Image: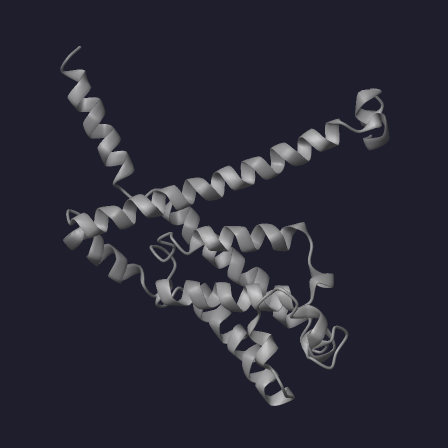
Length: 209
């Protein structure tokens, strides 16, 4: 019995101080990047109307109480530079090159373009922005990326160092934060759905079928 305590402690230690869900975070990186790349592409022809200062939403309206890099787009040239930079950053993010830096840039450009015109937003955009904050603290280039070889070399040579263990701990907490966020979302959505009259009266299944 007493011998099992050190074993449990060792197993718990190894679980916490070893990166978890590396494939999952890598796939999440690719998925989020593809979503935003698709977003840029489908709105490309309407970009001036949707996000430029002289478009559907004037700069005096969207800059109240919020920050977006598009508030510096004082002319079409600067706007195009920012817009194309957003596309380039998104592609680099998908490819997983310089993950730490690219993750920050991807969040800034994604937040900025979504915040620029609130009429295009929905619940999915809000969830995306929250998850991207957590993704900043994850190791999301361990697989399917240009940085994967560097990650495994770093893990092999530095995983016993104190700084590396702290970064591993932060990664695991960020991953669990993503999971908890999604669980809260679906639990809340399901709870509100069951509060509807059709569910309370037992007729919801009839209308679904």
